[in-house]
Image 1: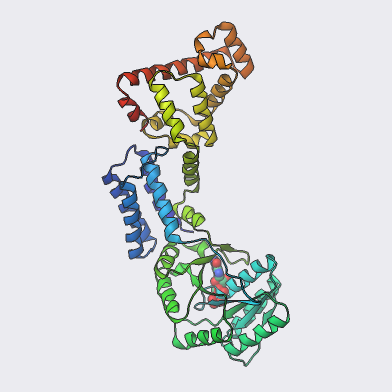
Image 2: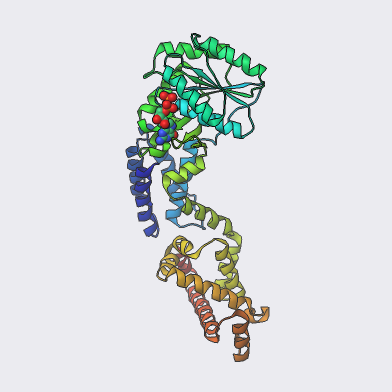
Length: 440
Ligand code: GDP
């Protein structure tokens, strides 16, 4: 799903990650690419335009988080705005007297009958007593198909021949009420195109029974045409939700993005395959991450922000600059890094100059070093951490034993620490101007 769009965006973001700082011109260049990628994925022009404008405004504006580098910030904003564009998570309205009626509408071939059976199976597994109604008397094959699917998912299918759909649905409703059915799923007739007779019929059904939900089933593979179909139905009958089918085979997932934005009708389900369990409750966060193809990166960005304590960072920076940076601070920084997850992914995320320095070392090596350094500092007494100058040969041997390392390792950590201290002293002399450059 969304492969074309995903690949495009991944390329753009890789380019973005390679750079240090972003200028407004950079943001513009990136957004031009994002815009193209979305258009190519068949997202509607007006939706793309709004989206790009919102991201650009936020990216070039003031929202500067110290926990992230500029590229990550742009990614984060694109992700957040995409979620906003994709709407709320799915909620099926199953309140009120039983049976509740869920009416599925849509064109022939949209996957409506399959969706009815999938939904029946899902609701049944949630403890509902479900009945399906075959309200498509014009196509015997459609009735047969629903009956077969109903049998497969273990849900009864109501059908009467020679009865017009509104009456048929009304009778099904009565029987459901008597039989203790809690959810009635109505598979309405599908036509090959929008027509007035169909709309009249759908309206007549809703006059007989008031649906809790009227879900429009749309094939996501048909691209822009999906938008016309959705607006056509919306003008004829009130829709409460969308089910987008065939999301598994779609290279142009843009329909999902624009259909929600243009109609304002919430997406409630995604059909992701022909199998009867291939139905997902709609989750915009998940879909946005999938579209961007970078769920891991987004997760890391969120973790980095959560682990980053602005005040603590400020205090540490001040201690560094006043030459009071101790092994305690060093240990605390390491703990903070550990909180964020696997090091090789984190290295990518370090801001600016530090990131470039970090990327020069191999990830495995860095991970090992980090563990050793942490173990060594943990084996020191508080006194030793605050005053490393008291670390004579016998103390160093004790620490090496305690941390399962060699005296050489202990010496190396102490040297790294002294180097860092010296670096901070130098920065102090330059009035801290160098520090901001170093931290990106
Ligand atoms: P209807 O005419 O709207 O009732 O459509 P059907 O339910 O008969 O589906 C039409 C075709 O699409 C069938 O071959 C289904 O197996 C297939 N189909 C339905 N939903 C999905 C889906 O989510 N993914 C894929 N790949 N195929 C689907």
